[in-house]
Length: 251
Image (cartoon, helix red, strand yellow):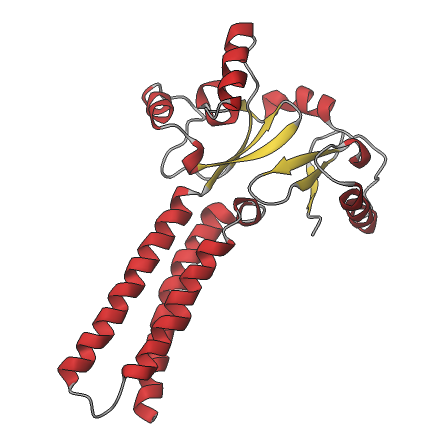
């Protein structure tokens, strides 16, 4: 049993170190709050942890018999390691491909934009055109303004295309503008919590209670919803400076 426990411990420690380095780098670079929540990575992360920190080391505990021939033991552990590496590669790719790249303000809402939201041709064009806000593999999350174009035909094309399953304006870097340039429009779209359509009456009650606990007025036009693949968040701004005062969950 001592031999089995030693093999289990070494396998668990090595798996923990590798997984911590990968998830830590992704979290610190791209998934820090509110990215991890809005991207809804629970299933992928759970699968990674389940395979690399639970199933793999437990299988090693089972097969690591001290009387087993060394070559057979190395082979068995090697098979487990290969399965773990495959799961790790898949999970890492999924998290990398879904990493948050922008928090965009468009019309009357804030939305997360992830790497896989971009059409390949649009992405290639944006990079070739050297657009200042175009995403690159090394890009970290940025707050941007993504207004619909002034041209009525272009606006209608984007809106109808989005409804039909095409790219929305938030996934079209050619229309990106700096966060600061959108400040007047953003300020005009701020609303009191009760006027924001993305939350139910029960959610609004929770949000107002949490705002009051932080000393934030609940009757001012100072908030906007931030949406993604999880439940919406409430972003509360200072109405004057537009500095973000809080990002609040309902659950």
